[in-house]
Image 1 (cartoon, one colour):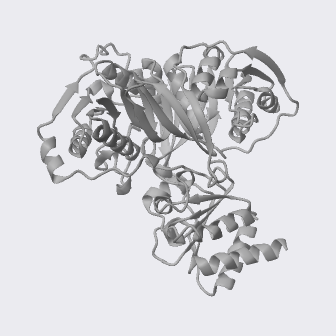
Image 2: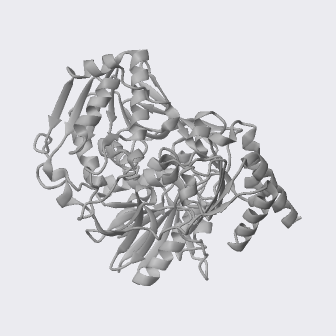
Length: 322
Length: 263
C-alpha cells in the first residue's frame, strides 16, 4: 500500500505552523484519492502541542522530543530525526517554508529522492501530480516523479486547512538520529522590534513601495493592513530605503506570495516585484501613474495620491465596521 | 587567509521577461540572456568583502551548459580569483539531486574554508540544492543568511539567519556552507580594471568523466522528476481604472472588496 508522510513544522512557541495544517489537509485528500496510508511526524524540543494539533488533521502522528533543538538550528535535527520514517514512506509532503525547504534538501540528499518544489496544486494519478508556477506565474507546469517515491514541498495558502472528522492518535518516540548531520549551534535568538506578521501565510497583504516615501509613510500601510486584518509587505525599493525590514520584501529576491487580496500602494509593479505577487487572487493598486506596469495586471487601479486615497479607504472601512 | 567557494548559477535574465520552455518542457536557455542568479550575486559580494578584510581567494563554481562562461567572466570581473565550470552534454535536464551530486563532487576537488550560495534561484526557486550539497559533504549548513562573520583563529563562522521574528545567530565550525540572501548587501559592478584583469584569470573546465560521475548516476537520464505539460494560467480579467476624488475612489474600492467578499 502506498504511504504518505507529512513532516509537520513546530513554531517557536511550540505550536503547529499554519502551513503544516494546510499540507496535512492536502495530504489527507490525496490519501483518500489514492487509498494510501497516511501519517504525520513532528520533531521539536517539546512536540506535545504541535503533534496533538497535527493529529487533528491526520489519523496517526509520531511526536519526537529532541531537547537539542533548544540550542541548535532546526532543519538538520528534523531531517536526521525523521529519516527512518521518511525512508519507509513513498511520498513525503512538507511546507515550502524556510525550514521546510532546508529539510527537503537534506532528505533528498540522504534518500536520493527527487523533490517537486513550491507546489501550487497537487492531484493524484498513480502518484502525486504536482502543479508548479514557473517564471513568476507566467506558466503552470505539471510534473510527476519518475520512480514510485519523492518529496513535495507545498506553498502556503494553496489549500484551506480543514481538520479531520475525528482526531488521530499521537505516539511519542525518542530522537534517534538517523543521519550524522553536523549540528549548528544557535548562540542567540534576536527578536526585532520592527518584526511584522509573516507575509507568506497571509490571506490579505497591504504592500508599500517607493511611492510611500518614508518610514512614517508606512504607518498608513500598517493601518490599512490592520483594518483589513492583513500583513504588511513591501517592494524592494522600500526595503532598500530602510523603511521596512527585508523579511517583508515581496519579489524576485524576496518572498513569493499568493494572498486572496493584494493591495499595492505606490508600487509600480516592475517585473522583479510582479513575479512575487501576480498570482494573488485579487490585486488592487493605488498609484499616481496611470501607465505604471501594475495597471496592466491589477484587477482595480485607483489613479491618485496614495496619501489621499489611503486614508479615505481607511475611513470608509471604519465607517462600514463602525 | 580565507578560501571561499561561491556557487553561481546562470539564469535567464528575469528583467527580460522572455523566459520560456523548450518543446520537451525544459528551460529554454537561449530565450533570454544569461545573468548570475540574483541571490548568488549577494553571496559573491559577501565573499569579496570578507576576502578584502581577511585576505584570501574566491573560486566561483558553476554547473551549466549555456551561460556558464558569461557568468564566470562576470564573477571574475567583480573580483573572484578563479572559475570552475562543470559542463557535460549528459547534464542537460539534471534535477536537484543530480545537481547537488555534481556540485559536491566538484567541491571535493577544491580546498575551502567556506562555501557560499544564493538562497534560491530566480528560474527554479527550489532553494534546496545547497542544503543537499552540504548534506552530501557533511558540512555544517547555515541558511537565510543576512550577515556572515568568520573567525579565522577560532576556525568558526557566525551567521545571522533570518527568523520569523528577527534573526538567530548561528555558530558553526569551518568549513561550512552558507546560503545567503539579499540582506547581505548590494553587489558591486565590475570595474574596467576588473574586466581587464578577468581576461587572464584561470577558468577550469570539468566534465563528468573528470569527476568520476560518467556512470549515468547523474544528469538528465537519471532525473527523478519529469514535466508532463505546461500551460498558461487563466488570464486575469481586464483592469478596472478608477479616477476621481479620493472619497469617491475609496467608496468604489471598498465596494469592490465587499463584492469579492474580501471584507
